[in-house]
Image (cartoon, rainbow, N blue to C red; front, side, top):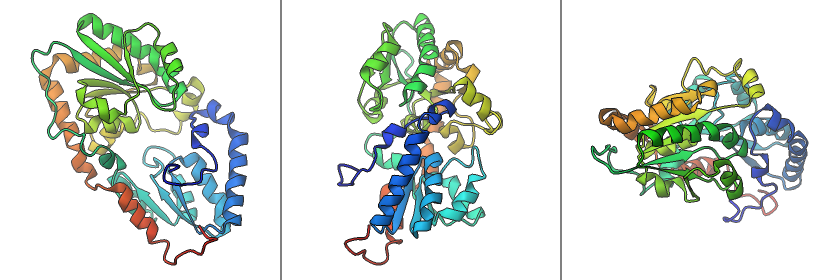
Length: 342
C-alpha cells in the first residue's frame, strides 16, 4: 500500500501479536491508535473506511468511528465460523458490507442478513503462473526429498513450535538420511532470531516467497493459518501444527471449538480431513515425524493426498479477488469526492 502511494499513519507490524499476554502489552498503543484514526477521519472528512482482517482491532475501531458518519466495508472476514460467532452482531450493527474470501462465509452472512459478497481468495491471484497443472506424485526411487518448514511469521509462534519441529526433523533424518530441510523466513522475523532458534541443525533458511520454492518441495510442516492453503494449492502434502502459550490455551479452550471441528484451512475448505492437524499437546516431534514419514514411505497415501489438495482451487472458484473487492468498494463511492474528502 505504501508503494502505491498510501499515507501510512501507523505500521500494523507493530501490532502483530496474538495471545492474552502478548496483547496486554500493546493496550496503550492500541488506544492511542484508535484516537489518532478517529481524529484523522474527522479532520479529513473521510467518507469510506475499508477494514482489512485483524478483527480484534478492527471491530473495536468500527464502533469508535461509526459516529463520524462513515461507510464501513470489511474485507477478509473474522473467523466467526470457528469461534466467537457472536461477533456477527457487532458486524450487523457497524459494518455496511462484508467482502469475504472463503465461499462458505457468504452463506453465513446472508443467513444473518448481513450484506456480503464473496470476491474470491487473493492467493489464487498471487500464485498465478506458479501453481502446478496436476497433482504431485511421489517418485518410487527418489534419491532425496525436500521438506519445507513454515513455522510462522511471529517470534512467539516460532518459539513455541521450533523445538518439536527440529525434533521431528531429527527423527525423519534417522529413517531417511537423504532428506533436506528448508525453513521459510517471513519479513517480520529477523535472520539472527531464526538462526538462534535453529542452532546448528542442518536446515537452509530462505527469504524467498513460498511461491518461489514450494514447487521444489515434497512435503511440508506448516503452522496453522493461510500458509496451509498456500502449500495446499501447490498440492504438497503436509502436517498442520499449532500451539498457544499455556494461559492463552487455558482461556481459548472454553471458547474455541477445536475438538469439534478442524482448524486447518485446507481441511475446512474441503470439509474433510485431508491432512493431519496437531494442536497444543499433540505438537510433538514424534507425531510430526510420523505424519511426514508416512507421506514419504507410502506412495498411494502421498498421491491421494496431493490429488485432494489439487481440487481446492475448484472450491475457491473465483479469481481476481483484489479486482472484485475494488469493484465492490467503488460502488460505495457513487459521487466523486471533493479534494478535502477521502
